[in-house]
Image (cartoon, rainbow, N blue to C red; front, side, top):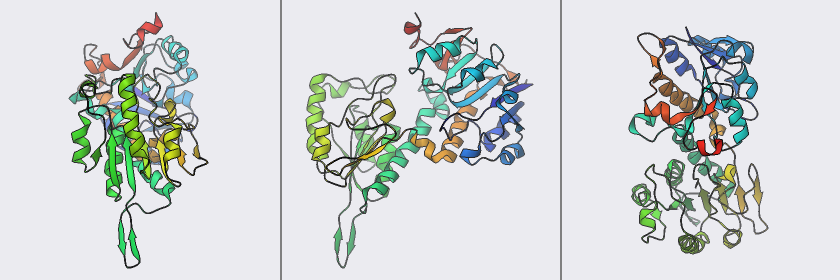
Length: 380
């Protein structure tokens, strides 16, 4: 019998790796889903709701992990959890593989099969497994909602007998999944929206959502995208030209949302303290790259500050987790789609195709060693 363990997330993480819907579907695949009591509480999934769909609720993490074939988590599991798994057990989670390398090496040494959901290949077949997109989509939405609440003025233009209230000007920096959702949300709230990104393919996406595209469109800009769809690091010369353009644009903005991240690197610095000082009192910056150091020079990760000139700067951590019910539901579906690639539906047992690019792409550690190509040089 295939057993899937789910334990309570540590610290402030409110999300959980299964939902009632995915418990039901995993059970239909022949799996026993063993859930630590209370694991879904912060995502508003009660033990009763999970049990009604087939989950086995147990009193402790140790009971959930005993004999489990698979452990699904949101964040990286603790060494104690992994130590209770049998050798060769599968772990699938958001591992933050470029952070705390000694900790990752220690998990690998436990001889488990470790999969990092962030490494999901960007191919059509894996779209339903893309956790970065599912969580970033919610973060982009929440960033605008939070910014609107902090702004202290109306977002849409309002024409009244007493006069006209102007629409808020919203600037989105970084047009990935989070940025696109931020544009769409700001537009729905009635803002005048502009956006910037160094990837040329984003220009059409920005314009299709009714926003204005802001960028230095030179020859370097035209080649500023990797095959995987990520932004390339730009030259110092380009960064200077782009910074000058942004500096002039940002002065007139009421709300700025920054979303620029490059996997495995510190967040690129997009907003200087001088740019912040040029903004009007009461304007708002929400920095979605805070956990990687921030796109804004003045961001304090995990805090909201107000500068001496009256600009509010928020550096939220795990913003998607603030919508824990939705975030957990989507993440659980990502995991379900991923686990389905490993389970033989007829035999109702594990059957892993090691040549599958989804398996190879996400595999971080196996047989006691780090095996992912992007991490292997450090291991050496």
